[in-house]
Length: 303
Length: 281
Image 1 (cartoon, rainbow over the protein chains, first blue to last red):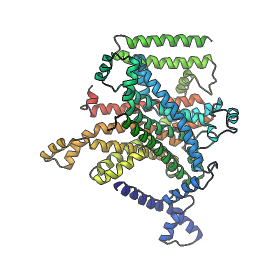
Image 2: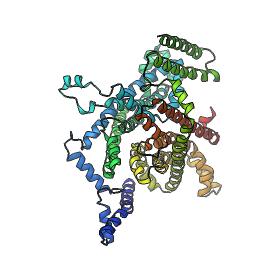
Image 3: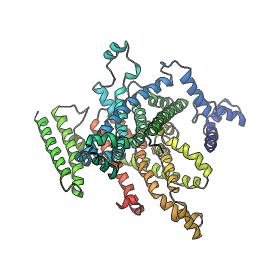
Image 4: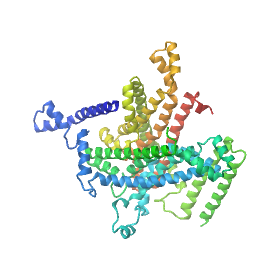
């Protein structure tokens, strides 16, 4: 109930500010046409402009509905198509980034030289705006020709055609992987170290070796930490994919929709791409939370 | 070929140096704690330099560190101007405005449990979204200059900061608040003498998260349009001209600025929350 009130309040503010920010255009148009507009006409017009400064919520929803349900999903105007491009790059990068992150964390926990050498850099790298290298990675990888998931020939041989998402996916996936890598390393190291001395001693009395300790104690007790960092990593991977789409060729994906929208002043298009990205992020994070709840319950760790 | 052999030998020597340092009996001393990551970092730079020269990687793909260093030395004035434009005008202004208004909002909604229950889930939800996507909209509203960058930073840091501050304000237990009441401390006294100090660890946690977000927001917003100045502008332009040494120079400056910013906040935190267990160890 309080949430609904807040959301309703946001809606009211949104409609009001869309009147406030769009009315200049309405008055300008009316002044040029030489007609007087009444207050109600003005309000109605600010909520129905084609290129408003701030589109009203229903315009965004209409555009979302239009570009999600009424377009063929293979069409370049379909948000499903662009969302899928972004999602595939995000997922590919996320899987690689978290996989490598977990491996590095295991190495750090078991090797003191790695711990002392790598860990300070992993922590320091979180204070660095890594996203700034996105355009460079995109350009460098297309210079050396490593942009497609499978080459055009391989993909055609396997599927009979080259699926759209495979084209130009690699630079985006690399950036997504890079962004999700460090949160996972830091979180996993914390998690693998979370068993206390008492528990470690118990396993020693069982005569358990390093490997046994890892599989039976360290890995299970790191699960809550893993899921927390997976959620951070997933959000970071999505941001990475979207930002790298600003400079990627071909210009596709949700980030590209925002960029073309800002070039041509198509504010409604930007807002609908933004909402699509938000929905995507919320769905991804929510599904990780769902898996988290299920598996922690099965392991008897849920609170 | 000589480069490759040299790199390999250097790597092996550095590796054994690090392993023996880390496993020596001095591994807990401060000097060794600093030495090991430094050796690791230098090794990466040397291997990078050697591989690029040995394999003759063209500099439009990966310039060697020496070339980047030379570029930094030559174009210090440009880098400085970009830093001022992006970091001081864009990121820092937005950071102060965003964090300040978030703390004020948190104190305001703290008085109303209804608003808290409504705003916190919404705030948490928004904090997980790709807010950077608002950059094109804000650039359109506030123009190409630093105002739009500051606006992006404000939007980006506001919600993480709000959530952290509200959590921090809830950190006191009823025993402490009861004590304040027995002293006849009113709302404001309790706020300033008990709850805000107790909230400081959480507030600084938010401030530290926000430092990175601020710099990212300011740089990425420049990809959507900027005056002919700024780190994000320079990166996207030099990438287009394949001047990768300049891009790396900007990235080095951004990394340095980001770490320094974080370091300053961490130092202030150390001074303010000296009483907290995490600072005493």
